[in-house]
Length: 289
Image 1 (cartoon, helix red, strand yellow):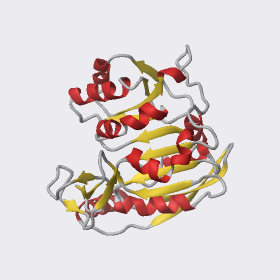
Image 2 (cartoon, rainbow, N blue to C red; image 1 turned 90 degrees about the horizontal axis):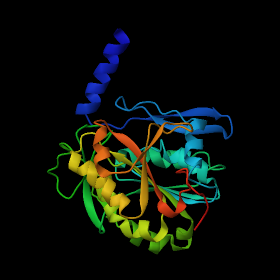
Image 3 (cartoon, helix red, strand yellow; image 1 turned 90 degrees about the vertical axis):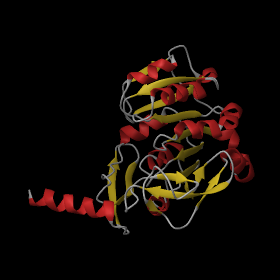
Image 4 (tube, rainbow, N blue to C red; image 1 turned 180 degrees about the vertical axis):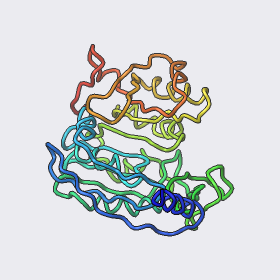
């Protein structure tokens, strides 16, 4: 009971008082990939992350060693690290997040496991055009939040003092990673209900390079937004699949119509495969274009 009370007090402080929380390095011994280090954030509002072999193998269904991959909404790197293990040291993994607080942890995690991963952390928002945004949170410790062009935002009342640069992803990649675009195989998007707008902003990239996409259908979004998320992906030549968890043998269900997106009231994960890269059983035909 005493431990619970102390944790409750720490969580309340984290919601009301802005401070920097330290990190601790955790080690996980994966059956295939060996010892993996991960910097866990000691923010009371954040759960401890565990890196598992099953999660790495889930991403290996879509990613080859040496691929170019992108994690949008990378947070502290909880999916970025498994994604980067799938791409390997020979690949390039961009971990993109606009939250200046979690970005410090993302940088640490990018510096670990260098013999097995190649992570490039980026403190950016992804937007239709290059412009600056405020990062705003409902929590003083900035465990989560979102971008806004103004300080008045639905995301909350805690505003990071410096603006964060928003970038058009295709323009950025053409300028900085043009030589890797033929290896672009995978993009994960997790932006707290903003996934649909991200997909819209990278339509040209999807049409040109047909990477596998993973997105969230945010539980609190209205039904119209959930259906629109289906449409903006499907119209670009993709088949959508619900999956239960980031595990090797997760439950999967194909979503064939927009209306089916409203069958779930909670937040769900979806992966989308380009039509031309799906076999008769609904599995990805791997390999570079």
